[in-house]
Each structure stands twice: as structure tokens, then as C-alpha cells.
Amino acid sequence: MQHTPFISIIMPVYNAEIFLDDCIKSIVSQTFTDWELIIVNDYSTDASNALLIEWSKKDARIQLLQNTAKGIIPALQLAFEHSCGKFITRMDADDLMPIEKLELFAKQAQIHPNSIITGKVAYFSEDKVSEGYLRYEMWLNKLIDQKKHWKAVYRECVIASPNWLVKRSCFEKDFSLSDLIYPEDYDMVLKWYEKGYDIAGIQEITHLWHEHPKRTSRNSENYQQKAFFKLKTERFIQLELEPSEKIQLIGAGIKGKLVAKELDKQEVDYDWFDFNADKKANDANSIVIQELAHVKTHLKTILTVWPETENLNKQVVQFLDQKGLVFGENCWLF
Image 1 (cartoon, rainbow, N blue to C red):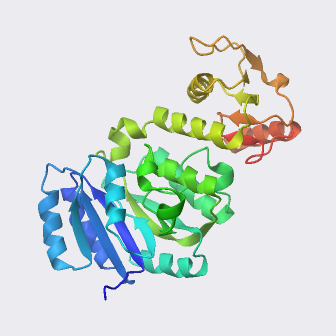
Image 2 (image 1 turned 90 degrees about the vertical axis):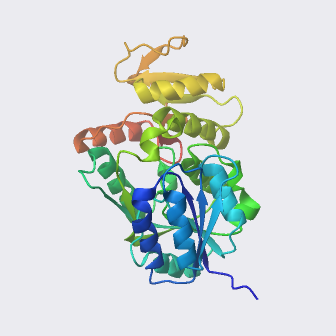
Image 3 (image 1 turned 45 degrees about the vertical axis):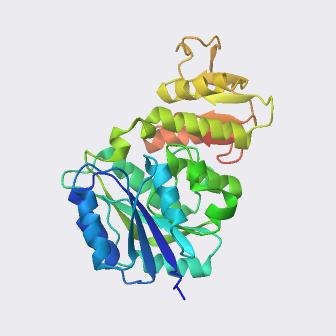
């Protein structure tokens, strides 16, 4: 009788030969051993496949597949179809697992089997990690402490793409990995939000995120700002608004204009506000940008501006309080 592992790790690989050995070593060195690793080679043109063949010979828990349709989404779906674990997690081939990651995930899953399990992250790099990534790291880890992931779900992807564990039935009953659109990690998080999953956070660092110039998130249009704003605005309209409901949009900078473009495309009625009412709207947009004083109370609002200084942050929060706007209830930071 075939053993059913507790955890299946699904991992797409594309041209990752310089990272693969360290990545897989971090997996086979885990203190928790009841796992299987399903790797899908996504048409690599370097030596990745040869390295993967050698690893699959070394450890019977490692299974190597060739992708049948190019891309991360079909790779994830193919890996899942060949997995049999009770719980599923994803790994990226250029990252590392802390030695107790799977043990921490497994313990939390036994306590919260119906939740999304995640932990804290830490970036590492051969060079200096950029300020933007360090801010994102700090923000993700703060969400673990505050337990407010869903209140911030439209701001950024609130769970790191290779730092989660979920029960198998999620991808059998709730949605299929092949249903995802790019950026697939954010789309999956938004689906978990839609399905009402709880998040069980772990205080320890459970993922070591490799910052380097060849990261897919740096080089693919699927993971650029336009793609994220298109996805999040579409999901916001679907999940938060009633048909023909009017909303407010605050901020007319780059982010505000990206949101406005999608609201226009989806024919959502909205009033637009900015700290500087003289700003121009989108070229094809006839909506007048109004002064903040005209923001209405308690009307659903998208906020696309967030100052970096604590003093200005407090002023924004005070303004929202005066207008009866509460994050995660009738106001969402994009």
C-alpha cells in the first residue's frame, strides 16, 4: 500500500541551475521528513533538468515531471495532479527553506487544519536587498503579529507565494490551480479571501526569499504593477460592490490612475478625489478630480495614497476617521 505523505511540495522550475542544489538541499535537510517533492521542469534551457534528474535518483521522495503547457500556472496544476499529500505547499527554486519550516507548518496544520498556514519571511541576497523588498518583508511580518491579513488584502499580496500550507481539498473543491490568472500568487490569496479561509500565522521565519536580478517578479510583465492593479481592482469590484454601487477613489497618482482605468473599463460609477485637485484624470476620463473636503462619509472608498512618514500616516487616519471610513470595512488601501 502506497504511503500518503503529510505534505506535498509543488515546485515549478525554469532555468534555475545556479540555485537548485542549495534549494533542494534545504528541503531534504528538513527536520520534518514526511513529505514528497513534485518538481515540474518548465522548458528550462540551462542545466536545470540534468540536475533535477540526479536529485530524483538520490531521493525517492522527489518526483520530476516535464511541463505540458508552458508557464507557472500549468506547472503548479500538473504538480498537484501528481501529488498525494494531505496538505500542499509551494516552493520556488531560487529560495531556501529554514530547517524547521515543514515541521512548524505541520504542527500548525494539526491545530488549524482548515486554515491557511503561513509564517514570517526574510530576504537574502549576494548583494544588498533593496529598500522596497525590505519594506515588504517588514509589512508581511507585521501582518503575522497583528493578524490583520484580510483587512489589507488589496494593498499587496498578504501571503508570500512560496510560504503557505493548505489542505489538499482546497484545490479539489474550492478552486483549481488551473483557474488562476497571473499574478497567480495574488489571485490565489484573493480566492482564499473570497472563500473565507482563516489564516494561522507562525511567529518564526519559515521562508528565506532570494532577492536577485533574475527573479521572475522582476522580469515578467505578469508580475508588474499594472498586472497587480488590474487583478485587484477586478476582484474588488466582484467581491466588495453591489451592482451599480457608487464608490469613492482617493489619489490621482500612478496607482490612482491604474485603478480608475479599471473602474472605467468595468463601468463602475465613482467620484475621484486628490490632495491636489488640479491633477488631470486619465486621458479618456471626463471625471473631475475633487478636493478632499468633498469626500462623503461612510461611502465605500479606495485609497491609493499612503505616506511613508508616521506623522502623515496619522493625519490620513484622522481624516478617514472623521469621514467614518474604516480599513477593511468600507475603506481599502490599494
